[in-house]
Amino acid sequence: MEAGLGSRRCVGGVAYGEHMGEIDAAPRDDELFGFMRDFRRFVEVALQRFGDDESDGESLRQAVSGHLGIGARGLPVVSEVVPPHRVVDADIALAALAGEDPGARIVGVAGDMRHHMTFGDLLQVGGPWGGGVRVGQVDYAQLPTGPGPEDRRQVVSSGVHLFHLDGTPVVVRVQGVAPQYGREDALVEVVAPERSVAEAVIDRVRALMDERSVLRGQIITFASDPYGRGMAGITFVERPSLSAEDVVLPDGVLDRIRAHVVGIGEQREHLRVHGQHLKRGVLLYGAPGTGKTHTVRHLLSSTPGTTAVLLSGGSLEHIHSAAKVARAHQPAIVVLEDCDLIAEDRSFAIGPQPLLFEVLDTLDGLDADADVAFLLTTNRVADLEIALAQRPGRVDLAVEIPLPDEVGRLALYRLYAAQLFTEDALAAAAARSEGTPASFAKELVRRAVLHAALAGTAPSDEHLAAALDQLLSDSEVLTRSLLGVAGDAGWSGEEGGFDEGGPGERGPGGPDERGEPGAGSAMLGPGPVPRPGRMPGVYRGGRGVGWFAYAPRAGGRPRA
Image 1 (cartoon, rainbow, N blue to C red):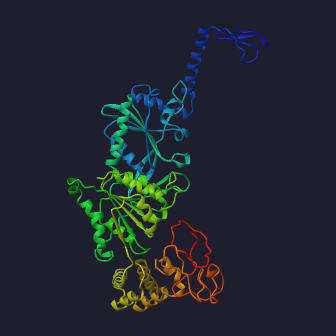
Image 2 (spheres, helix red, strand yellow):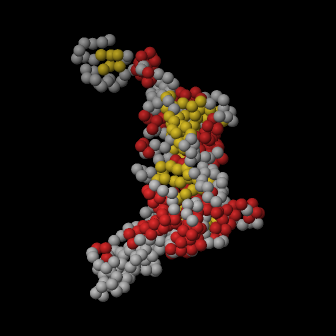
Image 3 (tube, one colour):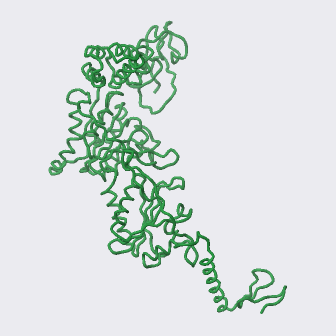
């Protein structure tokens, strides 16, 4: 029955008023439900017959439910967070598991929702006729697997694996790292007919990630993301090739270090049989440029197949991740360079204690039988000693890498010069360059070769002498300081001290030619030239971290 305009009309047993939404309070339920079923069928047929290309194909929920043989909507999802440096390992592990099933396949997720929704949410989306999320393309990304340009792997960054494991159907969804969508870590989500099966899949993935990791036996560094709070990933480093003959140290020093780092690893089984611990910490300390990093490079060269993690400065905030890598991929070496820079730095630590204490606590957290060596280097051992004294037992061996004596300097010149100059010229240079570190010797030889190249001739003894004259000149005071030459920066010989100067020497706080205290830095105004080999106004000691301005008072001592 249908009445005219202004009256009521009845459609499917439901009476509507003149205005939309005015429904009789007592419609007949059977006719109403019948109409709704017919309308649903109408929509299904319309979508199948006239739907656009985006609606064609299999829905994600249909694909998952069909593979599992059970409705996927009510199944639990077991997930595992994967840090950026383990994404390749996770891809290798999943490929190995899926490879056990000849019928395995991988599908993608269509639409932008794949970037923002969990697997459980994707399985819930959609209407009653099949779901709004369709099966789409698989997303891939190229990630490094080693230091070489060809060491790369194509990994799944967005996709769904469908395979059988031990006869049981499982589905694994992978989401890669995507900082642009707020995802700092990758995510592996597993759905199976039983939750215990999904948990077993995660356990298998973890085991295979460690067993087949691309990190094992590699040298890596961690990097922070400058645009976010997370980790940008890792960088693979080529293993250096540096023999013992390339390391110039006093007699016995390198042997002591090698015995503790390399020797313990070579005798690990013998030590374990006798109940001795393998974890060790070695501290290399000394002035800048004396060869601490060079020694570390030799140790890395001497331990092929050993996993190594290099951290320095701010990247030390990743010490916990580095310790996990070392623990999982033994034997391992963790190098912590310039630890004094974070001796009092609380900016990266969670809580009141400095980051260095976090580092030392991590050292203590590894099992005693872990074949892991921690190598710490510092230019300011006094600062580090305070922290180490409050955390005893983390370092088993402390070795000074001293400035080379004349014999050592001659050996360094021979090493870097590679027979470019005569023995007499090298000996003369070694005698004139007292108090200079290995970095000075390396720069001296390079300058001599550069002088020869600019002159268009082969390197000769004259070029070496000219380069040495230049580096020892007053115009190169700051250069020598930056190369680690002690005494070239107003250093008084005491920690925290300035060069106090003397009569006629306008140093920071030292008296001027009239016997009056200097007013701050001599570089602020005219005055007599400082003593040769001294640069006034530069403070080198103390335990502060960072840059600061300071106008010294009379007496040349910084205020407490």
